[in-house]
Length: 345
Image (cartoon, rainbow, N blue to C red; front, top):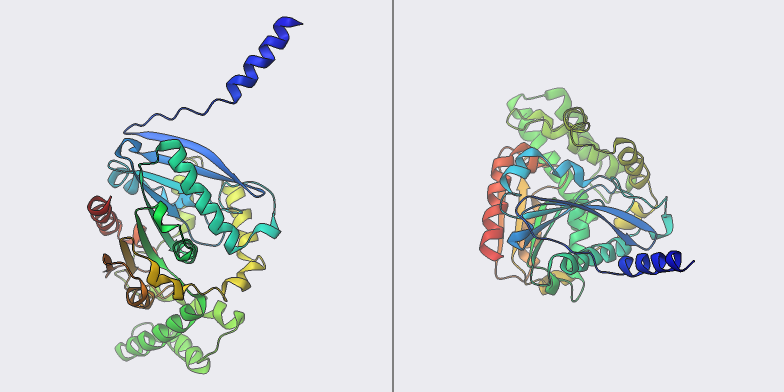
């Protein structure tokens, strides 16, 4: 019995030891962040030795950071920095069941806070972390930065075609669709499609309920495809090209997306408003938008520029992008992100 007891004791002691994390130039490190009923997949790739991390906060709710992990980003950002691909609760490859009672914006903000703490525990308290929120990730990252004490834990904020207030987003989308629709009709471009959009926008000046908001969002997705300079971004094509090669968990990602996209907390998101706290944000901030983004229009950037208290805040716009400049103008995207992180890390 004694050898058996000794083996158990040794196994227990070894299991209590802190994981040793080595820093390197071409790291690929996967772990799961556990928080209040969820086990969230985190992939860290690139140069952890740089001590500079780009933390991707994806959209949705219910999408995945797998889609950010493109070959271009791997080549043009991971060569210099470490990129953190985090799947939020009920998204991507994350686990934990439906967990409905914890699928809330405050809980997801807490998850992000815990991830920042875990990254510092694993890679060093001296690392620089830039939080990058895209689409819904813009709202989640706004919630993070508006909360007292959080910005002191990170180095900078990158806001990419996001929405920081959903009711404002509906107004901006409707106004942009109406103005651009009228202009395109005058030019004779896609007359049937734009006429339908203009008629709907004229008939719905606001305020907007969930049904109108959903229809405006649908029109917004369609609208960017009417411009020849904007490359069509197909999720299905990305899945066909990369899913098998990079072992994407397609079924969990699909099921999580369907569930989160229809979860009750989406109605609560419409009431979220952190704009009054933005004056307290003093970290360097980069706002990035596609000129043809009707989903989260560049008007968000104008509002953020007026409210953020940072002395170092910048707004850049891609003339050939819609809602996803990291794919539709990837060279521009990586260049702007690299320049910003190098300057303020």
